[in-house]
Length: 267
Ligand code: NAP
Image (cartoon, rainbow, N blue to C red; front, side, top):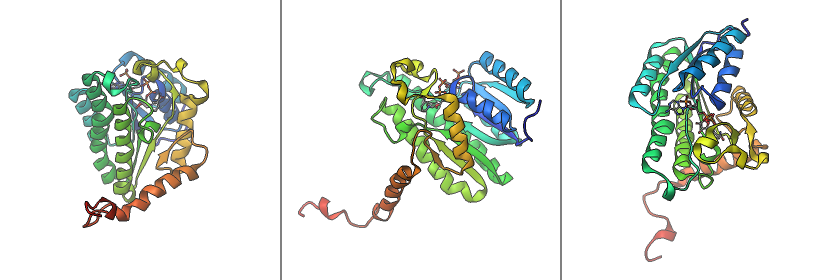
C-alpha cells in the first residue's frame, strides 16, 4: 500500500539500525523511495522487506563499508548516477567514550574516516547534482558533542563539530541554489551506539536518554520548520539563537591588521 506521493529517493547511510533505520521508516511513510546503506546486508534486507510491504515504496539495499575507500566510492557512484535521488541522510557514524589518552589511535583514525571523510565525500558527490537539478536535501547527523566536546571522547566531539561547521558552510553556499541543509544534534539516544562506543545506554540516567523514534520524528519536524540546526531536546530555540548570535557577533572582529591591544607585548 502506497502512503504518499513520490518525493524521489532518499539515500540513508547507517540505515541498518538505530537512528538511520528510523529515518528509513519515516521517509518511506513520507513518500520517499529509499537506498539504504550500511555494512550489515541482512539487517538492511529485512528492513527493506518490511518497509516495502508496509509502504509500497521501492527500497534498495547497498552493503558498503564507509570506513573504506572502495565502499565510499561505491556510494559516490550511486549519488553521481541516480537522478532520482532528492535527499541524502549522512547518518552512519561511530562514537567513543574513553578519553584520548586511553584510546587506540587506529580507532580514532577509523572514526574520523567514517564520521568526517565519508560524510564529506558523499556530500560532495551529490551536491553538484542537486545544484544541477535545482533542489535537494542534505541531512547531516552531528551530535550535541559538536558544541559540548568535553562530554565524551574528544575526537568524537571534534568529528561532530566538523559536521556542524560543514553543514553551516553548506547552507551558506547552497541555500540560494534550492538546497536544504539540516544538521541534527541529538543528545543521548537509545541505540546500539552506546554499547559499541564502550558505555551501554542502560548506564546513562534515563532522564537524558531519548528514544530513536522521538529523536527522528522531532528532527523531521525541525526540517519541516526550516531549521538549519535542530537540537531535538532543546526546549527553547531562543537559547540556540542567542548562542549562534554571539558567534555571528564575533565576525567583524576576527580579522584585523593589528593584534588586539591586550596582546601587545609592551601594553
Ligand atoms: P547505531 O545504532 O550504532 O547505528 C550506526 C549505523 O552506522 C549502523 O547502521 C551501522 O551499520 C552504520 N555503520 C557503522 N559503521 C559503518 C561503516 N564503517 N560503514 C557503513 N555503515 C556503518 O547508532 P546510532 O545512534 O543510530 O548512530 C547514528 C548516528 O547518530 C551516528 O552518526 C552517531 O554519531 C549519531 N549520534 C548518536 C547519538 C546516540 O546517543 N545514539 C547521539 C548523537 C549522535 P553497520 O554496522 O551495519 O555497518
